[in-house]
Amino acid sequence: MNTLDQVIENSVKMGKFQYIVLLIISMIDFADGIEKTLIGTLQSILKTQWNLNDLDISLMTSSYFIGIVSGTLLCAFYADQIGRAKTLLYSSLLAFLLLLWHSFAQSFQEILILRFCFGVIFGTTIPLGHVVISEIVPAKIRGQVMTIVATVFIVGKIYCTGLQMIFLDDYKSGNWRMLLIVNSIPLLLCFICSLIYLRESPRYYFTKQNYDQGFLELEHIGKVNNGTSYQLADEQRQGILEQQQQINQEQEPIKTVRYLFSKQYIKFTLRIWIVFMLTSIIETTLYYLMPFWLGDSQKGFMAQMYMMLAELMAGIVVYFIIDSKKTGGRSKLVLLLSVLIFITSVILIIFEDSFLVYGLTLISFLLKVMFTAEMVIMNENYTTQYRSMGVGMTQTVGKFMGVISPYFIYPMYSDNPYSPFYLYASSMVVLAILSATLPFDMTQVELDNMEVYKQKQNKKSLVNNQ
Image 1 (cartoon, rainbow, N blue to C red):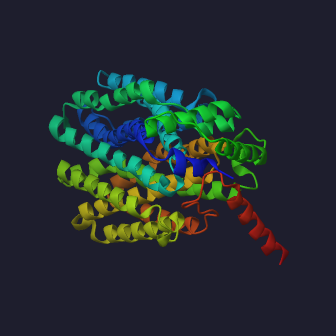
Image 2 (cartoon, rainbow, N blue to C red):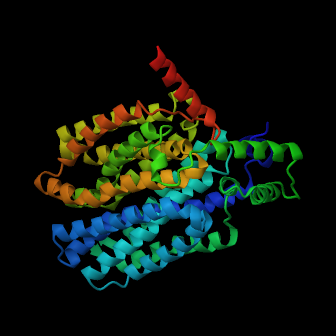
Image 3 (cartoon, rainbow, N blue to C red):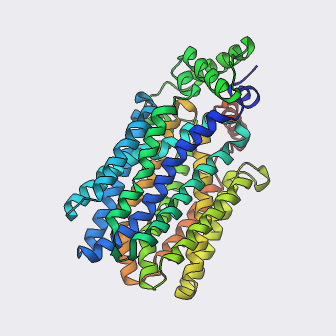
């Protein structure tokens, strides 16, 4: 029987259509990289120029992440109803307008509201890019393609850091308004390209049981890739139809978040939620504190650029190892990375300022590899019918750490600039244990392969019977 993944790999193939979608999706992550770099820098500058206190800075940070959490919740429950392509289209336009509005803000109250609103819109957008691209590429290179998207996120950070060197004097002064205006342009480009090229994936229509439209979308991809008229053979249509009908029949008829806690998924959901929470603690606090660490130690923008380049190298490394089973699978890769971040954090606690730039650079490198692997794991393990919900809810839980972390991370930094690394080290111990016990490994496995879940459940039944 011809499956959808087999047809994509052997007949439709990876080609022009997927590369265009990859470019559009990459713009979202490019803009996300810009935003993650701007978070700490904008706060550091406004703290000086507007005489803000630590509570004000915490409110700015948490308001943005409250928005992100709200946006990812909207993505989880409404993106599949509205349509993923439409959601990306409208949210990229609104995000552009809101970031542009930031540059004209005149008060702390105004910037606080704008940070929340931008977070809502951007939070809706962030999870969908990985969902869309994962559904239209061959299984054997799925991890590599998603790594490219994650690497563009790093390029966005490098781009923003370069602009900071042009528009800012240091981490406390400069033309931050022009910096925001220039950094809003990628979101406008994303909207324009989405308007022209982006379409719903065939899998999206198949899960809606709109099989005719799903076949039309699949044939459109084949036509764009092959440059000529393309039609599915009758046996391909029949094979895909049988497979998708079987998948739709075997899905539990639960249309709410309770599905993520069904017998099939509860162990994976709980583990991946905690894994994302711990990873997000490090990721978000690293963005908050980096300008303060570097600014207070007189390191300058070049030190930040070195860290971005290290992350870029991490993206290249991930590209070559993410789809290989030689590493023991993606979950084992996350385990190894958590151990390395733990060791680096302990060294930073011991050597402090003399190891600061090296330590932050190494953590940035390792964290990028880890986060990319976790994103692939999350997108692969939830079936198409519930992928947006699964990804959106996991992102929501993870991003929630960005809401609460400012209220304990800034006081920790004020007491001792190196105390956050104790938090990093302890988080990695828990993350290592959880990553070692993730129930599924979907490396090079077709999406929606129900046999993987059945085999796991059968093994459990055999163990219980014995």
